[in-house]
Image (cartoon, rainbow, N blue to C red; front, side, top):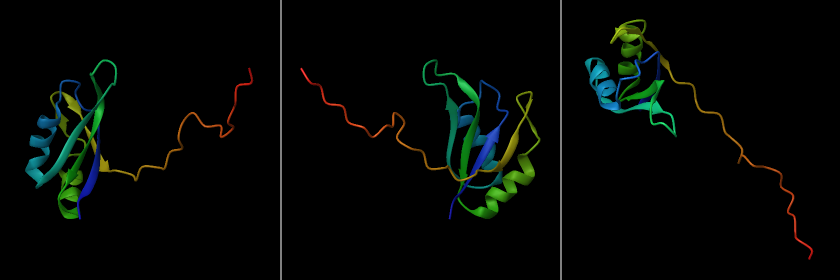
Length: 99
């Protein structure tokens, strides 16, 4: 089963492909994504990497956490499961127009 990692402190110039190549030294990378701002498209300085096995993910945490990447010290840890989110503009009350 694949294991997802959180990677913080990324240099803003890091791309998803660059992140994939960097983590490939620890095993097979299923996916690598640098999180970007929706409006500007610029990196937000963190991302997620999915390794093919839990053992490779743990090796990546031990090997790469607290290492320098392009002049910045990165933080690598097992990603926490995403909490369920509600729909957003909640309310539940339906308004009907009376004209």
